Image (tube, rainbow, N blue to C red; front, top):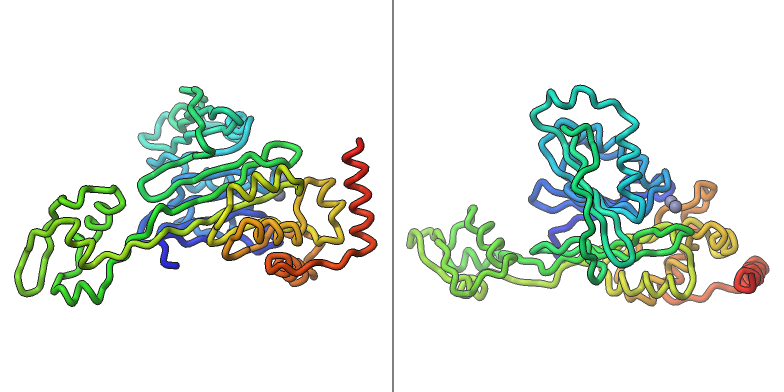
Length: 353
Ligand SMILES: [Zn+2]
Ligand SMILES: [Zn+2]
């Protein structure tokens, strides 16, 4: 499906987790989790406008210092979203450095930090020029899991269970506007900056009566309404949905929360640290197995599953993890093994406890 968004994992599946979504033809990106960022170029990190942190276990948040190092001294505001206690986590990281010279800077980075709770969010501002002192802390509304609602996309979250609250995320493009090059030629319209304005008008939902100047090859500038141009040169298609789920346990309530969030995604990035034979270990550590990731993706009717965040001890079994997840995604049952029987006993004992 054509899309304005290009998603990629920041490391291989055995490395620290994180996913970046770049906006095509724009100097902007969204970042989901901040594991080790050493493979990401500074130029790409400078495009980040919003960061979404699932939880602050070290493998998901160690890259904050790297990002800070790159953006410090820039006139830039970065929005950071995370679960409860997140403002203190960010403030604590920033308190680990000395900022006695920042008042000499005329421009420096600002962080707007937003912490997600069940019923509301809390927002605080931390500005470099104020030595990252926490200010303007206030409660803000949290409706239908929506973190951001821009003209072109939304980002929603669900609070999942990882023995601590851990956020899952879904990025949904509202619609995708394509300019048909062959129709432009047919209509004798020139290409140029007016096409960006045209796209912007559609994304912003401007009235069909809105008039634009259209340069043509033979007739010079013509006045056309947005409604006319929609019929002549524009193709509007539904946008892409990209979801990101990490570090969470498999149980019915949690599975339902994940499925509600990621339903129908074009691509689901989902953790798969363990194999199904290690289900007990997964339960104990509040993580999914590859089979569980595949089952969730199947039940949520996602189009593509991309598993990652494999346990480090599976260096030589990555193919097996991917295969197991894919088999479950395609509806293939796994044979019951002695290990899974043990697992079931374990779960039953847990339930009785
Ligand atoms: Zn993790
Ligand atoms: Zn974790």
